[in-house]
Amino acid sequence: MENSLQQGIEAAKAGKLGLALEHLKNAVVEEPKNPEVWVWLAGIIDDEEKQRVFLNKALELDPDNVAAQRGIAYLQRQKYVPSQSPVTENKLAAEKSPQSEDEPELEYPNPNDLTMHVETFAKQVDAIGDPQAPSQAQIVRESKTLKTKPKRSIVDILIYGLTLIVFTIIGILIGATIKNRNIILPEPTEQSQISLQSPGDGVFLSVNNVFYKMALGQNEPPADDGIPSIMARLPKIVVNNALLIPAKLKLLDENNNDISFTVEENPDTSFTISPTSGLAPGQYCLLHPISDENQAFYWCFKVLE
Image (cartoon, rainbow, N blue to C red; front, side):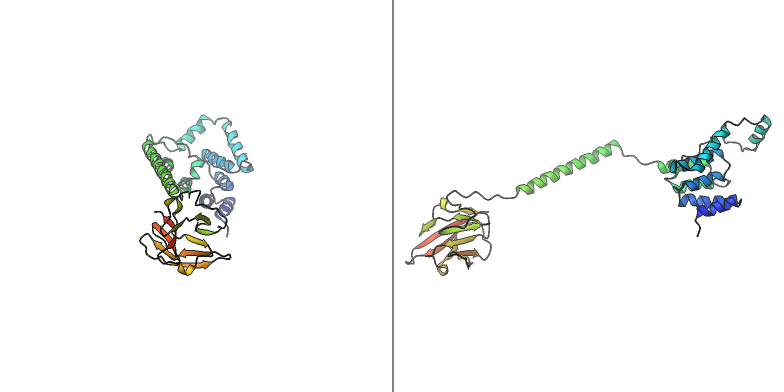
C-alpha cells in the first residue's frame, strides 16, 4: 500500500492539486523529517513565502537536496524580475483581501519550531487554500503557547539545592556512624596473646584463630592481668595438657552456674571446648578438680558488652 507521500506525488502529477495537498498534509504528520515531503509541498502551492519556508526546511534536513536547491535559486531570481506595470500591480492589489488592522501581517512560523509540534504544523498546512481554516495569527499564537515552558523561580532552585545538600550531609553522617560502630576488640596483653600459630602446652582462649594464653589459678581465679577479655559470644577454649581430663572439666559463670559445652578432639593431643549457646557479658572460668575435691585449677576469661 502506497504511503501518503507517494499518493500525493501521483495526484500532483495527474494535476489533482487539491487531492495532492490532502495527501501531503498527511505525509507531513507521518514523515516530518523527510525532505521530499517539504519539496513536493512547496511545489503545489503558489505562495512564494510559504514555498521558501518549505524549501528551507527541506535543505535543513538534506543540504544536498537538488530539487530544494533549484527551488530556492528560482525564488531568488524572482526577486530581481522587473516590477510589473502599475495597471498589473493595481489589479493584483485589488484581488488581495484587505488586511485587518487588529491582525498585522505575520511571517510564516519557523519550521524548526513546527517539527516539534507536528499537530500545530498540520493545522498550518490545512490553512493553505482553505478559507475555513484558522488564521495564521491564531496558529502562530498556538505555536508560541506550546513552546512556552514554565520556569522555576530562583527561590525554588535555592530551596531544592539546600535540601539536596542537607540530605547529602545527613547521609554522610549516617554512613560515618555506621562505620564507626565496627567495634574493635581490646588488644590483649603481651603476656596473654600468642599468635595465629597453634598454641603450645597450656589452656588458650581462641577467637578468630587468634589464641590468648589463660593464666592458671589454683583454688581461685587468677589475677586480672591473666584473664583475657573478648567481645565474642561464642569463643573456643583449646586445652593442650595431657593431665586434664575432658570429662572432669566444668565451665562456670560468675555465679557458679554450669555452662553447657561440647568437646572436640584435635589431631594432636589437644581438644577444643565450645559453649553450646552464646555467652552473656560477664566472667567465666574453666575448672578442673584436683585429686582432692576441695581443690581445683581455674582458667578464666571475660566477655565484654
